[in-house]
Length: 314
Image 1 (cartoon, rainbow, N blue to C red):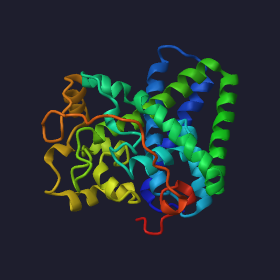
Image 2: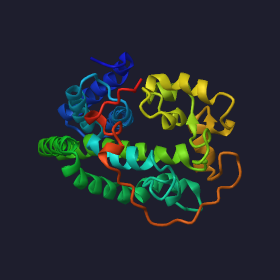
Image 3: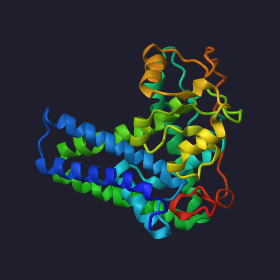
Image 4: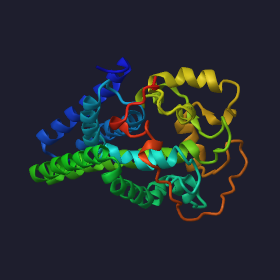
């Protein structure tokens, strides 16, 4: 049923998330002992966001209906309709990286102190992402009704579950449901800044920053190998480390193979050094409004999550 048995790992963490959530609501007490529980929910919800990213590029199951159901599961783990990840990420960011057609381009944040850029990047690009979602959803109602129905189903189920949990225990809802989901959404969007800021989107190898630490990549399903992902989005996450070594070995700038995300974050965001990948000061281009990026469905056959399975995917 699974296309790759390695997806048992994210499935385990999804089960852990729901188990922790059930325990939190059963306990029904919000106190200082809730802190480690909230932290675990934040981690597992963020892992759901990472797997959302993986699943819309490379569907997890062999059939369309299991993938449609899985997107509903991911919607509940991530706290946002999975189908809405398609417009801003697959069709805008991937197709037009760091241009004005990329609604998530990192040049939208321009604080002098780089720590503020990582904190507020989510809020800088959020309005553009929501507009992209709305525009694409309206267009797809007639262009691709099946995708539209899937998106509506995910949103409807999410809203019903949220309403039920809110009625059961509003305090637990805010702390154990809403807070981890906000963290997951902030985290997955903010990763774009870490992976692309100061890179050269026009080059073959130096367009993305990679974080190659083994612990990080085990926990985030190889999300650190971002360059090879941009070169071949349908490639399953379990195959990206080997593909990265084969394609990028000796060709990528060493500054784009970071062994430690915490060490990079310290230099870039605590010390506040916003630099190019080669160590030179980053000079931001003139910023302007977003440009239209909406494609036709027949131009993006492999980019719609469960609704299109790419036969060339590995």
